Length: 291
Image (cartoon, rainbow, N blue to C red; front, side):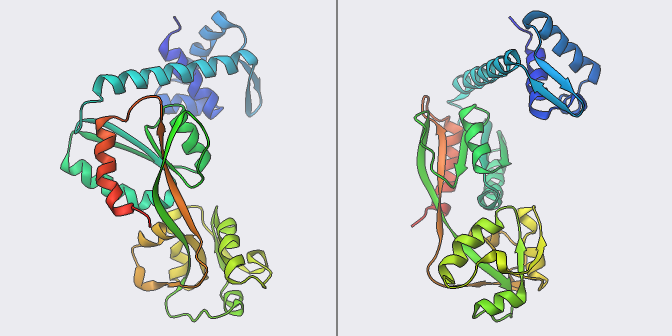
């Protein structure tokens, strides 16, 4: 039986690729992390190829990392089975895109205030990370914008979310020329979202890459700040716009056709949801039911 602490150190090191960051995450010394890896290598052979600024897993290291995921999944399943009947006590874990997350998190906190025995763990992440986290049992619930085709997952429709063209309040946007004069505020999904929406509303124009870029921000809660300041327009999902704290400083430019994403709820299909997760979904679904 391999020491669980050694396994935790190795799994964190494989994820972070750095002994110092791994030690900080696990609240250990760097020497302790090195010792844990050394002990594993004494049992299993070389696990890491150490290069300047880079760690690479050997085939044995990759096999051990898969084993770590299996152990973590088994531990989580045990905890879920032992506490699945607890409706208002214990942890509920949810991983979601940032836009819907901005709308979900305040409601999750309201639920936790109503039931102080609950512990809410919520992470913002892109689709692939959400998918991996649910499949690896690191989160019980996940939301994605692209429906996965995996028999290990139970997938259901959770919400519909249109993309919106958002501009500074009071600025007239009637044509492509108006967008050119205003300029685009970009973000990690900005080019893709703008291409999808603008190509439909302005099919005869050259596209978002021809527009002047007036700024870029990778924090979803801040994307509308430069827009509110009159620096440009952007394309974002509706829930991100609804979470903005200064709605009077912005405006949504309506138009046809709409581009609407479906948000899909994921959880592992092999075992039932915990009673806590069912409680959370009962609380959230009425406010996010799509058309």
